[in-house]
Image (cartoon, rainbow, N blue to C red; front, side, top):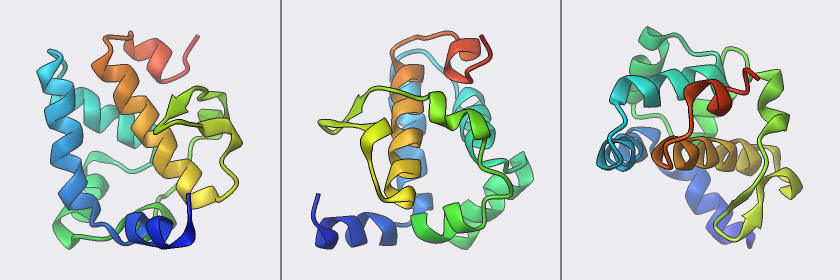
Length: 120
């Protein structure tokens, strides 16, 4: 992925993408609560902190920069998103964005929350 498209993704407002995550999950009979739980697991945001980020309409770069505590188990997230292995992405911000995409994909595929949250 080139820098121009990376920069465009980093500048996207999390608040604009969040409803798409929820829609994707709900189409597969998952809930907004499960989406929120997944995002909070990855980033360390509380429910209130997550909704504050949405209200402030922060971009992805700010959303991840302000994350209270990125989950150390995120390195256990493996797989392909947008044709790229998430574990091989070199840019840390892009990797965190793709980790989130992969978690939402797993949720939509019906995986158990324990597996999604790497609580094996």
